[in-house]
Image (cartoon, rainbow, N blue to C red; front, side, top):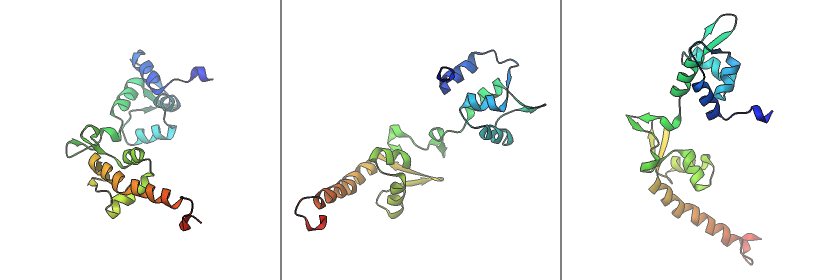
Length: 161
């Protein structure tokens, strides 16, 4: 069974290299090719993001499926006022990226931005946090928090008992 599993890139390459003139696939096949659920394919069709025709069953042309894949939404490609939303090269990161960098839950990052411990900027619905701010937060709060925990675990400390 594992022999039949292909990575998403391998599937995309296979689809692109096949003759796609009149080749059509079902919703189930399209879902497997795109590594998504059938429901996601139905939603894309309903939102007119993916072209499909219904005869006795839904049929999706492989050219249309490839076009859908190229135009598919990706948070990494998001822009706000014509600029990339999360421009990591220039030091701008999402809350989830910051959480991974700091090794803390994303909810803690949201909370820290909400109460002002981390200064972030709202761009649309997303928080954008700069690398300098991440480093400042790490130094001022996370390292001190770690020092307090280590101190409370020292032998002879009344707080540890």
